[in-house]
Length: 283
Image (cartoon, rainbow, N blue to C red; front, side):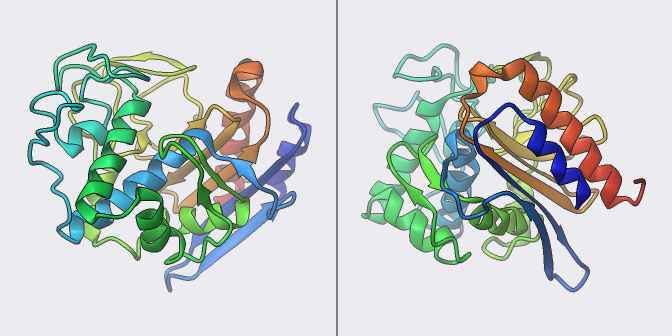
């Protein structure tokens, strides 16, 4: 796909990217650029991976998505649904509760870390082992590894992340009703901040994935549908799936987002729009 060549102009040391489409027969087609086996820290692209493992645990009956958790390190009344959708009131990092449960969208690494701890306790194995067996091994993601916080410390490469984008486009590990819940807007009236992008009212979010909705400007493309879901990360990574277009994109870099935020918020939408235009045969 020629649109991918846009990444060669990004002000980063290393970049690799892939576009994924899934045909009517379920077979995935992947176009890529760069060293697709090069390891990158995913940063917050780790969160959708944590969510996928958690939803498998929900389907297996290990944990409940909607039962109050009842732990001292989780706000009273909060559920896994609140934690996964950044609606628990927990701060970005640390134990402080900044809002009542279900009242505001506060992006929280801590919330995702609590989810992982809950799954680990219920499964009686470390979350990294559960996630590896449930998601990484199942999808053939042999180069992907959790090395710390499940919210932001997964390391992977474009080959493996293309496999996960394929899974998000056409789920095989989750039942349709479960995967639909992941990408459904949770607590749709909540206001919140997309870190590094802006404040939105409302600020739609699914379970571990951001949903574009009517957010503008946004880090995805102007041509992306409102149903587009995905994530970007502080290490200069981004990934989205547009279910209406039937296409997904992942791009991994090794330059911290904060050092090129203005450029990234120009280059990422440009790439996204070019990918969608080429996919639709407009170029």
